[in-house]
Figure 1: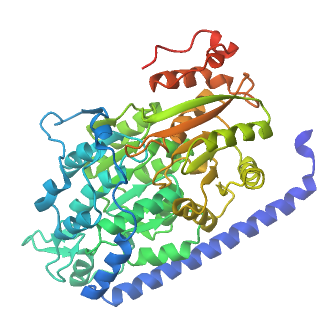
Figure 2 (figure 1 turned 180 degrees about the vertical axis):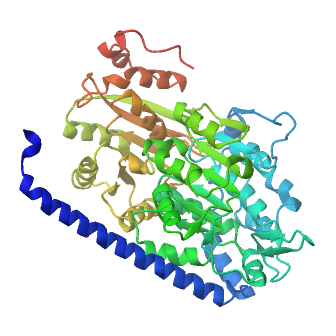
Figure 3 (figure 1 turned 120 degrees about the vertical axis):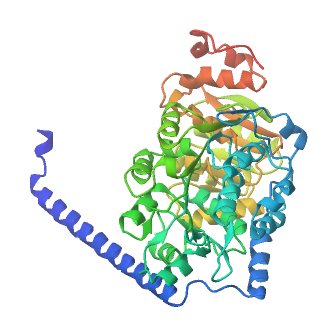
Length: 533
């Protein structure tokens, strides 16, 4: 039989696997020992020392010189975006009119950070989520990338965590009040006064995100919002050496931003405890489930030392709200407030969607894509299905069309991806070719044009089309999305299986539907959805 082949080699394979496992365990043990040495050293030295005025100013200049706030908002556009808000107490609560309104209710360091961030008027998600979150309610928010959601969860979390000043060291910090006299102490002073042994890093706020790119972006915003306090946000993610991350964890990590795999690894090594977690945030929850992280998320929330839902505040953010997300929300949250900005799972109306008939031949498709690109000035994001296609499209655009392009996908290491992203942001390249790894969670300020070189081929993947085109038309700008449509029902070659969803999408956003598309055999079998917007 088929299984019997190469029986002799099985033993060698087994030995190799065991040797590999032993090596991984040894490395993991060494890293964990290293963490405890760093942690011990940090605590014996009296923890993080208060910064001098000069070092605070320097850090401030470095942190806040980068682009902050949301660029070029078209407020009229924002005013017209529908917001749906329901759940306990939503009738009484008022939306946030301006960040100045929060003034006195924020700790001084946070009020200063908000000023330095140059946030203009709150975006729809911020206006509705921040007041509820500050009241301690659980939230389920449906909002697209680029809607200002990072601030919508980080601001209330930071306000609640850093709301008191330590009686011993005078720093605004995360800590505990002494029940005897209500004196408030930061964790470090509390442990010193109590003579407590060195314990693992206690994460008070855990923010889970699907990709390291998104995790890094959230971490940067957390660093800005906690500037001037004793809160030390840390970011941990897979695919990068653990040592540097363990170093950072030894110094703090009260706000811990993490991808699920690396977080569970660190919890299981005993270097992070979730026993004191007061806030749990799941960002881009639908994307995390798409990427297969549900088992890890459930382990972290339900099977480790995280307090149950009644003893923590949970905030979930997702661009779409399919069944599995509804189920998670029901299990992870108490009675929650539901906030939906724009049409859930639908693209924004500020995107002009164009559909182009294409043959199943990549050279001819490339010519059509290049032609479409010439019609739009500004940054262009091209989506493909496979890593090899990304590299090919990139090479051809450079050679044949003289376009400054680069690609970003799963085979490129972290520093390569970050380099490409920086070049794209800085205008060194005008076209970035990406697989879906890059579709969500990347902080690209503004893309004028999204080209779907390869459309998704099955109805289950249609969500990824919505996420892809959601990279343009953001923060009130208008954008264009071009899709190269290949006829035919065979998913290996054609896009016929998503034709009906695509038609519905075009009609919803009042985009023009070409005759050739309406006459496709794949649409004639049973019509294609309701009338246009």
